[in-house]
Length: 108
Image (cartoon, one colour):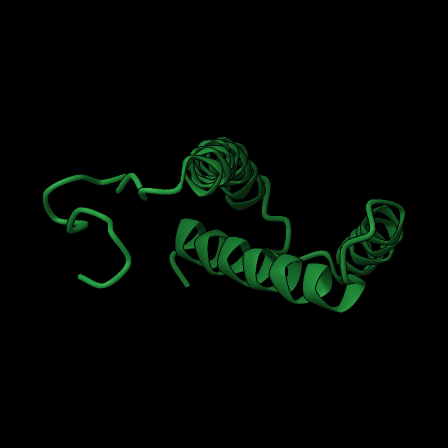
């Protein structure tokens, strides 16, 4: 390898020779792990919502809530100096997956 790291297969978090780069990468790895855990928790809750909606015969999606959430999170993204277009694409991807799960819960 030309970047002075160990192969990914041998070490899930390769340590570069540059200590500053290694510190940045450790932070990124920690954030990525936190994102995965947060998404897992979010999907546990939305799966419970999907089961509830199926049991109470509510529709799998709520377009009004979805649009309000997107608008709210676009504002949050701007406040956090994150590209609101990116945040919307990310949220829409998650919402689409949640709706797919809700359809599955209904047996659609």
